[in-house]
Structures are given as C-alpha cells and as structure tokens.
Length: 476
Image (cartoon, rainbow, N blue to C red; front, side):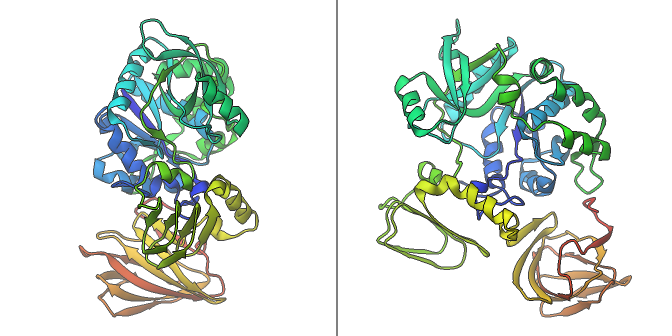
C-alpha cells in the first residue's frame, strides 16, 4: 500500500502560532514531534517510507523536507504545488504518479495535521480498507461522533456491506451542520464524522475523476509531462512554468465534491480510532494533558485561580489570573486572547488581518529557511535588526541588495563570509559590514549552530530586495 500525506493547509485557526508561511502541520503542539512528523511516525508500521508521498505548497516544501529528513524520506517523493487548489487536483496528480510506479497500487490518503490515539484500531481499519479497495471500492473511515460537532462534515450510513462487519455504503455526504442539525445527527446514530482518510486503487480514483470531474482528469497527463526535479540541493518534484500556469487555472474543489458525493462505489468503515482533526485551539482539550484545574499550560506560565483555560507561550513570562474557559497564545510578534467557544472564529480574525494588510496575518516573526531561520527583533524607518541562525554545514545564497547595507556580528559559532570575491572567517564578537550592491554570502563551516545579529540600513528593508547569483536550493 502507498500512502499520500496532504500537507498544504494553512491552519489559520491556530494563529498566531500557525501562519500561512509556517502552518499547523509544521508545528509541535503535543507529543514528540510536529504534526506531520507524528503522522509519518503513525504510518510507518503500515506503510514503508519508500512508499510514502507528500503533497504541499511550494513555500513549505523545504521546511517539510527538513522535518522529514530523520525518517530518510526521499525528497523526490514530495510534490510542491505552485498554489492551493484543494484536494481533488492534488489527489488526482498523486494518483497518476503512484499509478505510473505501480499500475495495481492501492493508495491511502491522510491529512498531515490530525491525531489518531488508538494505533491498533487504526491499523485494523486500514488493513480492512485495503482489502475493500482491492475489490474496486472507494473506502473512507467514518468516526462515531461523541458530541454535536459543527466543525466537521458528516457521512450518512447506508446499507451494511455483505461479509464486512462495520462497513456500510455511504448514503450521502453532509456539509458542516448548524448546532440543531448536529444534535439530530447525534441522536439518530446513523451519522459519522468525515475524517478525510481515504483508501482506493490509484486506477479507481482516476476512473472516478474521469467520470465525475473530467475538467481535472483531462489535464492530469499534461501535468505529468510538466513535472521536474527542482534545481536545488533537495530534488523534490515541482511543475515547470507551463505546468504552474495550467495547475493554477484548474478548479479548486475537494475530492468530496468532485468524486465522493457522486460515486456509487463509496463505502465507509465505522472506525473508533481516537481521531481528532485538532482544528482549533479548543481541540487541544481532547489531546493534551491538563492540570488539576483543567488548564493546558505550555511555556513559561504562572497561572493563578484559572480554570479550563489554554495558555500557550514561548520564553516570555505569561502571568494569568482568574481566567475561565479562555485561550491565551503569545508569540514574538502577536498575542491572541479569546474565549474557548469563539476559537473557531480565529480564522475570521486572520482574514481581517490580511484584509488590512497586517503582515502578522501571514508571516511569523521567526521565518524558517532551508539553511536555518531568521527572527525580526526590532525595526524603524531606516533600520531592521535580525537574529540569524545558520545550521552546521549550510550556506545562504550568493546575493546582493540594491537598497540596503548590512552589518553582521557573530554571537556564537563560526562564520564564513564571502564578500567581493574574498573570504573572511569570523568567530564570536567579530563583525563585518556588507556594503550596498556588494556580492556576498554567509555560511556555517562549523559543527555548531551559527548565530549572528544583523542590522540592515536603507531606504527599503524588504525580503524582495535580494538579487541571487547562486543558490544551492534552486531559489531565484
């Protein structure tokens, strides 16, 4: 069986930790790893790392690969999409890739940012799904609801499938209901949560796409011809210019709308696997440990007389007093305070920030890069102060800036600086100035993390003011 992890979401309900450029699946909220790392770890007993594929957004590709490096995940099994087009197009293209490798392949689709707490039942459900997929069915897992949830889609149970316990035809798919309808679903006992886990033959889903979504299916072969390996250090799959334009022009539609709601071959396995989509901050109540007053406290927290609250911070002290059913999330550049019952509406808050042009809506204070990261610490009209971390053995691009000069001071580690075709070696407490328009490159030749503080001076202080001449990661 082949596994496909869909990891292109933005996770805006987990703002300000999750943002467009550092989404939920790349964050650690609980457990030993990030959400995508936990997903891979959960699948490895069932699917070999050689048979795992990942689809994600172009701007998240390098960080995703960095997080999966410890699993020996092959970079050319990651497909970097030029834009977000929902799940039908992503699944269709992945099905073509898998089918080309194995014409009889069974492929399972998994979200990158969900939780499954019962590994044994999860394994049993997938093995059963694999058998049904061999027979040509499109299989989905239905989660028995435990509450009248308005944030999930639902599956209506149909007739039970012969010779397959707890397996049913899907009578219909239901969109996220209002509270009144969700209560009725729970009372009736024939509705299940739609968890977005699917198992089918690659050839079967392609056939269904051809029948029910021909506008997408018709272009899959052309898109396959546009796939190429990236030119950088990590040779993940991407589309060439023609492929990017075609991909961007195709419909943005979910696999549920495109196929599942229209197919007569859909079956559901009732699966009590301890599933949670962790869709908003209040969902942590079900997956995280709490103190004796029902609080979930992460970071440097002093909480007094607080009950059933979530307080999530980093290094800065957060002191809370008398909170009840409240969410407090602190990051370097943004603070969220909301009632638990409104945590689903954080998405609307982020939309408002983006509409107003606030950079905090999209970009975090610490921005991950393939070579490490940088953090904006302070800024004014003509200066910007950054903390830059370069991983051992990594190197930034050879570049210049039209509108700014830079001054670097090494805080720890060792730096190798290429400036105007000369090479300089700097250690802690040593500095260098990068003049306007000068070609330069920063690298870490050592075995320890390199930390430098950079002060930019200029009339325009923008990440777009980078002219690259050479880059090991293929960036332009």
